[in-house]
Image 1: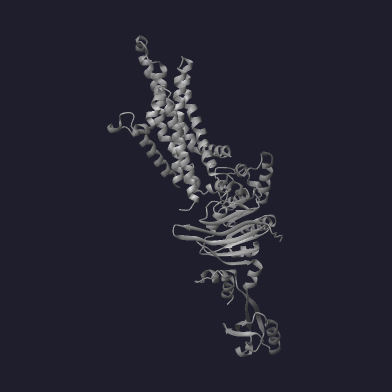
Image 2: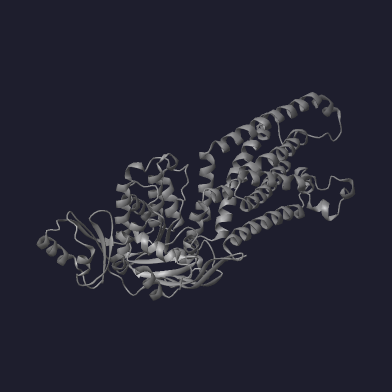
Length: 325
Length: 249
């Protein structure tokens, strides 16, 4: 990853109220060139509001947002040149063909006449739209419309690309293509991705923000998040199951849970993995081991843990402990 | 940028059956009225010859045609303007414009100019009918031009009010009915006997009062300024309204 020090999006102390309801509360973060940021959160967490503020569709109640160093409220036209945005519903004119639509978008983004056709071709190629250029957008399937929406967001190759749930309605092959496209975009640009689909975050993002009730409750790199998901328990099964106390004897084992006949869950000290010893001992003693696997917390577990925590402290360290335990 | 948005608007209009059917229906109605007026002229022609200072064909055919056109288009323009912004809000394509490097003023002006292109096409089609009289006679060009200008200004005012109503709601039909209500109110505002005398504020507000003199060939700059003010007011309101959607309340 070629993450540079160049800050492309900077959000400082941004809040937004709808009447008395605080949708986004004191949000602050920076995104650098070369980063793919995943924005996660349950429904109504404030993801969309945050994204709408970054793209200049909503004005924040407090705080400051700069895109490529330009304040989006002071000089919106200039700042928006650096943005490509795919909203939740692709903003396509259904009565236009794909080519006409992209041509209009290119004009909107001040792409010069001579360079327009090339920009359209590149965007179409990147989103695999070459065969449907002459078709009406309204007649295309949801997946194609979504891809037209993405093409629109990248047509002027903006430094900041913001995608709100880009893989909704796509088939698995397309999802894979779009994810690799996002990764590719992340190399030269910075991408903000909002999503409900948790595996998408682990496969495409460098950094993850989990938002709940308008505040960031977790900021982590994907690697750290994956480490966090490594849990400290083993699931083992034997044909000739030993006594529970036999299993307790292994170094590092904290507790053993008896599951259905012959299966156990062994909680151990995260630093001491007893699996190798268990396998050896099993052969020695003729326990006839049939299954052994480290149990991994899914991202869902981490997510649910964090977002359902009632008195969630913004302090990340506290949250981390809660999530692991 | 304004022109980009305007041409897209015009294209979208002509890609939907709405624009074509509106043009067809308006043209049919105007043609029927035109023939009726022409018939009347032919009937009384012999008597006109005997009169001193008799009204010409322009007064008898062209002026009533433009007067009727205003009434018909009062019903039609709200249908044209209703989807300008509200449809984009409903299908969420407005986001595309709002996140592109264009200002809200440019969006509103683009939309307005787009719809004015269409109105101009419709007006030219209507104007062709009186102009066809040139095949068999002469017209008072000054009067025709004045009537044409009057209708253009009137329709531009209708369109600006319709544009504003369209920014208020997500439902095109609501935009249409409120535009129609507003325009009709401004049309009949001084019909009540109390306000009938000229010079009151109420009678000044009436769209009709500023239309009639122009139609009869009396060019007063105050009438033209009234329409321009009307248009600017509603365009400004539209811009403010769209801005308010983003801001904090």
